Image 1 (cartoon, each protein chain N blue to C red):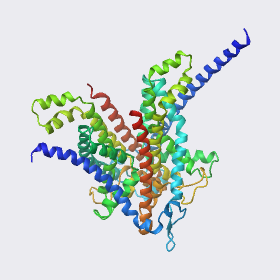
Image 2 (cartoon, rainbow over the protein chains, first blue to last red):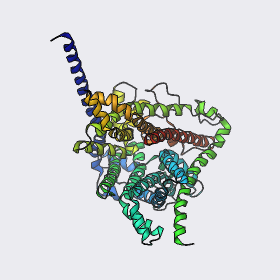
Image 3 (spheres, chains in turn green, blue):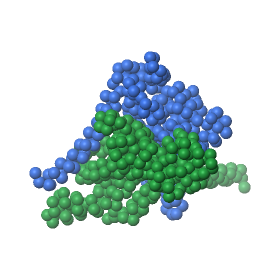
Image 4 (cartoon, chains in turn red, brown):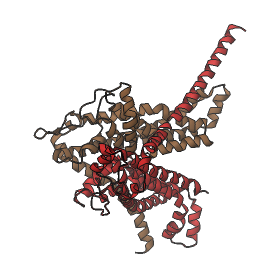
Length: 297
Length: 284
């Protein structure tokens, strides 16, 4: 074997080795990125399961004295997160009530006027709204609702802030879904003499319901875990409160409160576990819906 | 007026309402920051002083602007090798099958974890680790927040990259293979040059996310109002400052915080706009 082939042989080996190293490092790094998810789930489950009992869902958050006594006696902290669960249901429910109809109508408008100039502007604005930091929306909720409308922190202010936050995902998913529905479907209905609004409401929207639903659920899961805007709007409350003009608690707010109170540290994990499972459940169901009832033509 | 017309007005009306909401947000932030702007002018952007002591109140945004940019850019640097690996894994090496679909779900779920839970995990798991490594006395600081932010933005940084990488034309890759290129060389010389701007756009959008993150950062950055001296120092970001101080703020402090919110809004707006612009160029 002469020298030149030996050199090229060595070079080839080097190239192949480089390729192999790169592939393995890539696979390693890709899977390493998923590790935090399992570490977080594991830590929450290990530390949180003790507190999960029936009372956890139906009792209000304990005050710091009760918790201190329980911890001193090595007992489970009494009480639960009922005020947070009710608060989250009300705040997120009200936000959905505002955002879902508006989002679907706006998404329909964008899909129906795909090339329009004004529609282009609206699309741009929806994109920009998607990027607004949640804390800024908290400031907006404070200035728009807390100060002038409810004269104090309120669940309503939290809902308004969160509704702006979930709007873009509903608008975009509605638009994307409706765009995939073939024009022939609409034309067929129109040619039968069905008025335009009925074509949209009875043919187009029902056909795209799965995509819209996916967007709605993703929007809900996006806001259900939000803490920052609620600190500036709903504030928090130690009791179950169903009046939307009064301060209200929410599960993520409770996690924050428990974090700040050394006596309630044991409650953090169960409250976080509950919140995390709720949101991951929403995410997974959105995925399942998207997969099962995909709009196909 | 018949229902046909009402319906059409409703559609256009929803669009107008969107515009009004956006204008309302901008106007509200502007009007809210006027008193602070009158007091400090453009010096607000460059002053490093944040002193709420009564009598000699003075507020400046620079430590928080620097803190925000430092944490989010550092997070982007840390997230890069991981996000790029995921993009390649899902977009090129393993497109179909159980393993990639598992990885895809895991990455999606990472995006679903609430910020406050990331903060908790960072506080109880990551912070002690940083302290033990001796990077910083207590484990708080810019570096710790950046690591958590890096994990949080992996889904955003990787998903667009995977999409554009999978769209690189097969003929280009095959041409390179037929010349004897290894897979690594195809990635380096064909895929990255072709999909580069799309991958980059994904990182820009992820940067926008990192800039606006609040809770996880608040719990880890140390919340110091001074100029950070390095990446292991304590600091504060704009979002975290608002979250910490807005509740009890009044007068000059209140309007200064709104102005911080306006700056934050403008910076995320610019970053997101650049990201969208690159994406638009791609699809055109």
